[in-house]
Image 1 (cartoon, one colour):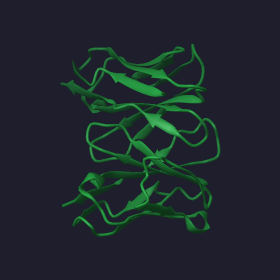
Image 2 (cartoon, chains in turn brown, purple):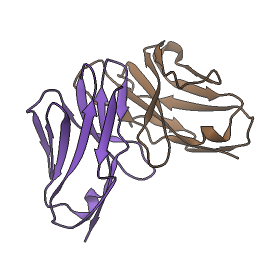
Image 3 (tube, helix red, strand yellow):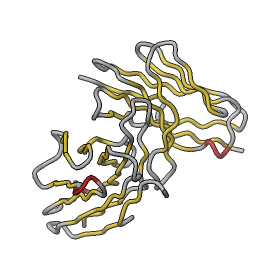
Image 4 (cartoon, helix red, strand yellow):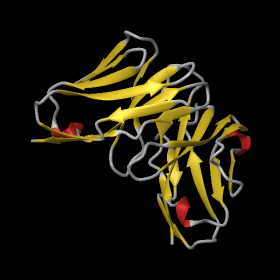
Length: 114
Length: 109
């Protein structure tokens, strides 16, 4: 297992376009998280899955954002009608269902909206 | 409101010069305090979990400690490869980990 994989690594899109990111977690991990990070800030929680169920969404997540995790494996995060304020690093993390475990993060997808 | 504040924002050390990074938090129902290391262009890498005041964890040149209101990451005799941003995060329930803004550490040879 090579850890948490995210694709693409970089995405440049025009304002108003839709974008989709993919995350492949560590296969044994049943928990999957999406975070957003802007320059000079720590990661900010977006949403959380336990297996295929999306159990929590941040109040900061607008209706333009949607995430799925079909069959409890990989996950996708879609942003519709992108805005310049959406430019950020989008991080995916996974963890097993154990209290002691920190999250294993992927390297992220850097989104630039022009 | 729950908050995580890290200080200093940036720290420059000479190789071998020991120091400490601070993470102060206000959170209802702390379920764990986590330290991560983040290199430029990469996702955070998990270092430690602390659960209760008085707890300490060590890994190589790093030692993390926890009190009821803050955590310290002590770096002993740092090397240039310890240069990174160090993030502190608190877990409030099973689903939500809140991060501080991080301390950007630079160790000069």
